[in-house]
Amino acid sequence: MSFTRKLLAWYKRNARVLPWRKTRNPYAVLVSEFMLQQTQVSRVLEFYPRFLKRFPTFGSLARSQPKAVMEAWDGLGYYARARNLHRLAREVTRLHDGTLPDKPEDLRTLPGVGRYTAGAVACFAYEKPVATVDTNVRRVLERAFGSKDVWELAERLVPKKGERAWRFNQALMELGALVCTARKPKCPECPVRSDCRAVRSGIQIRNRQPGHPR
Image (cartoon, rainbow, N blue to C red; front, side, top):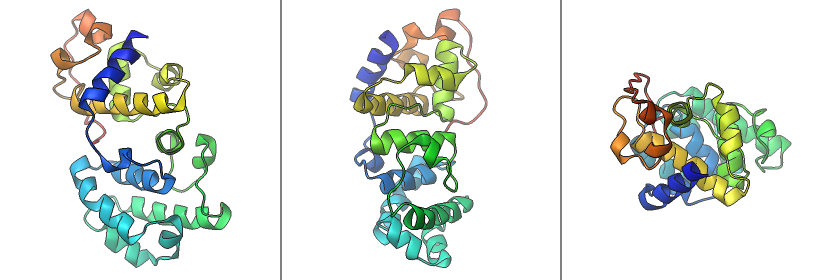
C-alpha cells in the first residue's frame, strides 16, 4: 500500500544509525529494549555498549550478583528494569538453556516483558512479522488512520515477510521519534502526509503526552 511504500523509502534515507539495529542477537536486542523503556536514546547509547561488554550473554548476566547488575545500570534510572532483566536472564538460562524464545506469547511469560517488548524482540531479533506498538507507533497510527484499536491496525499493516516487517516497525518508530512528534509534529516533512487523516482533515494536532524516547 502507498503508506508502507512511502514510509519504507523515507526510512531508508533517514534512519538513525543505532547499534541495536545492527544486530539480530536476541540478548543484545532484549537489553536495548529494556534500556529504551522511558529513557532517551542518547542516554542508552552511553550505557548499552558498556553493559554488553560487562555482561555479553544471558549466562554471564545470570551468574552475576544483583549488586553488580545494579552498578552497571546505575545512572540509567527505573531500576526495576535491571532487576527484571537479571531475573529474566536467570530464567532463560535455567528453563530455556540460554535461548530466548522467539514467539511473542512465550516472551510475555518472562519477567518485565509486556506486549510491546515481546513483539519488538520477536521482530527485531527473529524477524517475525508481528506488530510492535510503542507510544510513538500508537501516535503515528492514531493520527494517520484515526484508529482506536491501534494494535489490531498494526497487525493488519505489518508486512508478512520478516525482513520487511523489521524495517516497517523500525520505520514507524522512527517516524514518531523524528517527525510525528507529540508536541510539535513536523507535518510538512512527513513522507506519509498525503495518506494522513489528521493532515487531510485539517485538524491541528495537539498531543501533550510525551512519546517513546527512541
